[in-house]
Amino acid sequence: MNKILNIALISLMTVSGIFSQAKKPTLMVVPSDAFCNNEGFMMTFENQGKTVKVPDYKRAFQEFIELNNIISKINGMMAERGFPLKNMETVLKSLEQESAEDALSSSKSGAEVNESPIDKLKKVAKADIIIQLTASVNRQGPKKSITFNLQGLDSYTNKQVATAQGTGAPSFSATMSELLEEAVVSHMDNFTSSLQTHFDDMFENGREITLRIKTWSDWEYDLEEEFDGDELGYIIEDWMDQNSLKGRYNTSDATESMMLFEQVRIPLYNEKGRAIDARRFARKLSKYLKSEPFEITNKIVTKGLGQATLILGGK
Image (tube, rainbow, N blue to C red):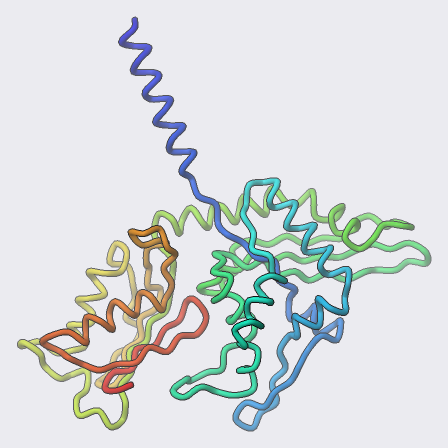
């Protein structure tokens, strides 16, 4: 009997340990482009002769006082359900300290695409999922109600992984954040369940990223160059087989001058417990190609958390 009890106790402790180690996705709530546009919080800059509009998050927080209350309310509801959150206003301050916003109107040497403010936020916040919020107040005489739309977006792929939308009951005196809480509360459990399901899949099968291989026009070689009896393009594919999680990726395109790998699955964390993004994954390939027998100088260019380009033949 004692032996049976001991086995049962060990089994219970093992199960408890597994559940205690279960990880929740890290989230950040962000006002959507539509929300910022409707409220007049947009800024413009020139990009290769075209005028581009992007959200002015900083001004939205400074001038729309209720915005911080709304996001805090959602943060609180998520925290009650055990989901850790990054505070957007704090992340914005980190961006400002790094002068990231100053780079909006100018491109960096070697960059192919200017990063949007949301991509910059993702890189600093390192959140697994962005919750994009759209909300508008409906007025019926003295009564007010709120219509909301919450979209859970994978930070690495921008794919929608959860959604909730609806309109709350009208009220004479409730604040916007109180109206939002009343409207959202009945949807929150299903919303967080969808988020957790997506994160569990990532934990099991890895994050999804996109990796591009390009070559400088003045490089003396190309991807058909042979090293130790095999073409460079196939050598890179062999590396992808060995380093993507469970060998899962798609070679969507391949020529003598470029390769495109999509739906590349990579581990969530490295051996030190740090989150792995497309840049860190590409860095491993970069170091591999810099070593013997290849000794190929290369440059990494990233866009957000989930896209990296490795340009071969120079910096």
